[in-house]
Image (cartoon, rainbow, N blue to C red; front, side, top):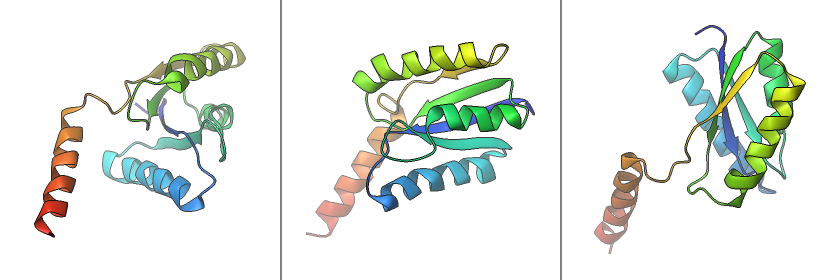
Length: 125
């Protein structure tokens, strides 16, 4: 697993705190998950972008990179933009495999989060 890198891939925002929130999840992934090679990347409006994050992990020895979309649903960015970017990156970094996971939608923990938020809101009424 020393040559596997993980990238948490968010949309990006002009609001710095929103981007920092995604970076904090990446840090928690590194610390709690024990993944040495981790990075955050953004599609737009923030840095680093996915090409820069992939290049940084490859420079650290990653030969397989898993991109985890920090998106709720499989919208146009994940259907069109991300596959195009990944295809370009695989041609730039021959011998490096880049895998993309499903977005957050459909994961059973997501409903639990929504239920907790609803319960907290209703409980405060």
